[in-house]
Amino acid sequence: MEITVEKLKQSRIKTTVVIPPDILKHAEEQALTRLGKSIDIKGFRQGKVPLPLIRERVKAEDLLEETVRILLPEIVSASLEKSGAKPILRPSVSIASHDPLTITLTFVERPTVFLRKPEKIAVEQKPVAEAETADVEQFIRKILLQDRMENPVDRAAARGDTIRLSLAAKDDTGKQVDELTVGHLSILLGSEDLLPELEGHLLGMKKEEKKTVTVAFPLNHDITTVRGRKITLEITAKEVAEVKLPELTAEFLKTRLGAERTPETFRADVREMLTRQRKTEEMKRREEELYRKVREATTTDLAPELIDTEVQGMLKDLIERLKKQESTLEQWLKSTKKEWKDLVEEMRKIAVDRITLRFGMQELAKSRKTEPTDEEISAAIKEAEKSGAHAGHHHPAEDAKPGGALYEEIRFELQMQKLVRGIVGEI
Image 1: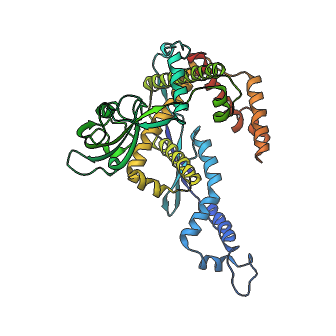
Image 2: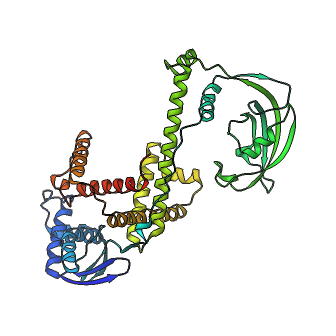
């Protein structure tokens, strides 16, 4: 084979391989033999049809595709040896010429990554205080509210009351906003279910009172059609009701929650749970700060093939999640009002961030000499093999050795865990 090597931008190497006639002939014969196994010709046993007859009956494009498939392992091996490439992805393959058959391979290597001042990368470790009594009581109040009693009253609505109302909504062009136009809505004032601005207009309203107000909706509102817009609301109060909560007793806890606990014990459990949530949120904040700083400090020029591969993986994950929800990508695009090209562009931006972060974290681990021990890797591999066996998956023995797929995957995961833990700290 005649092989020429060309170094491209973005850590890519292209090899152009010209296939000699004798090698091409042998590969075509193998391809015809494979394709002939599915061809029935009267007078010949299946799989015994002469190659010239098979050639007459197969499409030229099918023969070429099968021929290239047969040639590919040898082409890849020879190209790697000639170029010295160390790819991190499967090569992209294309046919440059049919006569003589010329195939190009593009290998993507690990890009050059620069991490600015890795020794300066750190995160603020804010202390986490125990949950306050007010937070505990607010949480318990939400539980008690599920068994509340409501009594209509003839007075202005106050915080803690329930107000029943109807809404008619129009946007800044005068068009009705269907998502906010409702005939009957029950709101518990002070429950944080509404925008503070809107709740402020409801406080003080009485039964049968009407009010027209304009409310600015935030950019992150759940209803996408009103994000960042000013909406005019016609409010009609239908009823104001005073809310009475049950008493928190051991009997209530047993009946409502199935818990054999005193109110004091329950309050202690809630405090511990809320404190644990605070710690989890602080750890998440620290990790997000670390990842943001690493992304911002990392410079690299990513090959388009690398980004495309990441996007394909993201699309596959999305399709799998939708399938579990008994939905399709087409239905999801319609419900979210997204165009296909916008989705792909959005995913490409996320893919760039993800890949940049991975390479940046690897550089940070290298600069800090963060490595899991052999014992840690060995224990994790045994656990992975045990879990895989339970699920019916078995890894080849070579995968668990240094350089093997399973070994390197686990080594990387442990390395990242150790790196992150060392920077964000413990709580």
